[in-house]
Image (cartoon, rainbow, N blue to C red; front, side, top):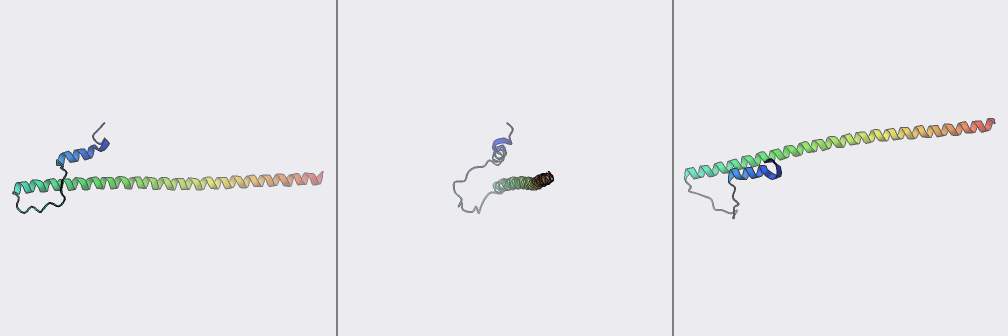
Length: 113
């Protein structure tokens, strides 16, 4: 099994970012932070945002490609169905014409004989 199967991509991203679940979403703003720590935190958040953005674009692109393929398949099915219905109408019309000719031929044979 390669790393891209079963959510391997997400595991790699989380490992890179050393993601930790936050216990509170209402943390007070940090007003005083050493520059090195601030920069490291900002880089981690920026990297997380960029990777999340890339993953979302990838998913959107994949879904668009799938939608296009399904749309094309649907149009192909509709075209094939239309051709089959036309062929069925032609076959029915030919059968009806043949039956009518048989009746007319039979009637003429009865009238002559």
